[in-house]
Length: 466
Image 1 (cartoon, one colour):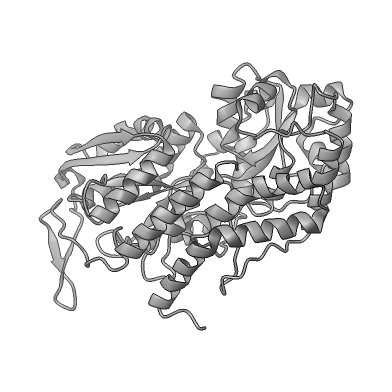
Image 2 (cartoon, rainbow, N blue to C red; image 1 turned 45 degrees about the vertical axis):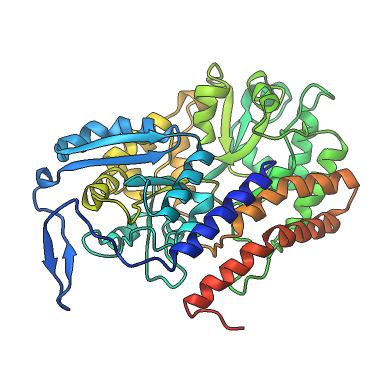
């Protein structure tokens, strides 16, 4: 995306925090509950009370909108189970939240008891000793491992797998959103399966783009570069030797299609998050966009609230495999004075089907907790906004297909390069390999410092061989 400079700076800040916190002291005192047990080696560990009403005190939950709206939708049930825990919300914009959290973790004070972490940055946090290891007593988070989307759960382990610091909240299964009314007008199929079949090849994508195009008035997508970004959407940019790995099946075919789309002015050539793109989605001037399933919520509430029946959802075009875009986690800072109550909040909200689905209905955060999908009344329901499609069933199917990948602290910076580098290559008239080479150089330059920090993490863990 265009904000790659800001992303890189934030990544560097959090990587520095991680480096500092790796050398931090051990577990801090835990004063939320006086109950302790004695382990086999004679050390005391905290324990959860048998009666939830015995958990008392207050916790602060921090994050960014609309996470607070999601939590509030499930809060009555939490208070029914934990009547003596008070919850205060501290929510601000995503960047400010992460900057404040990083500062508080480095300082050792000022962090909330429960904090949201955006999926893009989880690699910067997962080795931090400033966060509570949820594998330990009394949390025992590992018991939930098989109940979560594998890709998301795996991201929260430290590099040596000795700690697990974050529970996944949501997942962003990627799909293709398209204007059914415009497709019908242009003689294209509107049924999701038929649209997916038509656009399963880049020739099909170009055919659709030409069919809907009105020069200077209507385009297939906001920016063709995002098709290429989807090929790396799981943020698996590096191998375990920290070598950049941009080679993907069909990557040059994708770039050649992007070159043709831009040459024929079949994309708007604007950022998909820009005001111009938002207005074009609503008016039908921009006919489609491929992104995470959460975009459906944006369409309904912010972008095109009057668009009921004018949108469809299909599998990704161009043969791009199932992938994830976004998603968030919840962590407990080690400095929290009420970790048991903080864990009770996380466990209730994220490790239970009913609250997960209440939050889904409120803010369209698609659960990473897969038992939530068993509610057929929700996941087999027809969505009127999308012409009666069973969109949640589609997203659930994609989510369950997402396997773990290798992530690093460089990933968010690498991702930030794609939009600018691909567009720069298009502007320079480079061929597909030329664009790919330019992107590789830009990523390597932008991530050099972060790569050294990541390698040091592996060295400290005894996992790096020169």
